[in-house]
Image 1: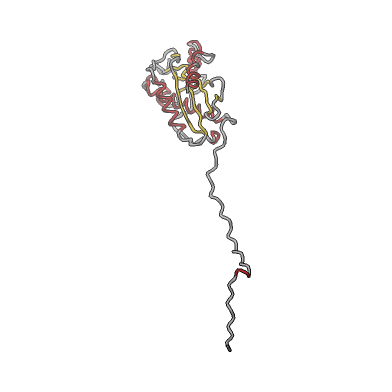
Image 2: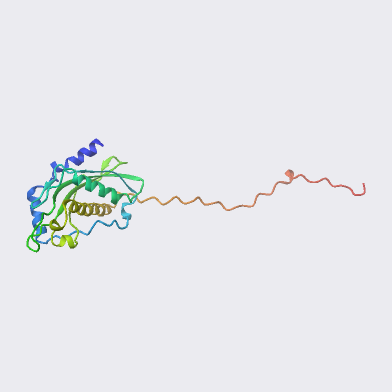
Length: 231
């Protein structure tokens, strides 16, 4: 697991790192309403057949290099890690295949909207993740570069006017964690070559049709000795 953990921790320092300028750009686009909100990940829904024989092994989240965007509340140390790891267990525990896979997730950036002025300045919350998948049996990463996922808070009566006014930071994080992990599940379902089909349930062995027992040879029969009635 040393190499696995090291690979995850390198996200924030590599090409996939996210700058404050990039976060500002995302925040501006969101504020202008050019990006739609994400569908809620609160409900698990049906299992994705595309994940085949998937079984979750380690689900590791690192957040040390996360960039906090403008107009954002501060996430407490370890809060993103706890929230995302719990959500990955909740969503992926449904899959009980025989092929083990590990998920490494780096929190690259986030905005937890602060209270704003409804209809005038209503900041939007969002989360940026870098995701890597490991095949345990093959002992290798399935994607060389972390896959970037950007999710926004799910639409609701509370987020319509600004979640900063109606939700705590913990509630915002839970909303974003649910949407982020649901997005990971959808992305995994698009990787057709990664997951073998789930093995069919073991069918009962077919019982061979009964056959008539072979007739014994005449030499094996014990024939009665005839008795002369006049003797």
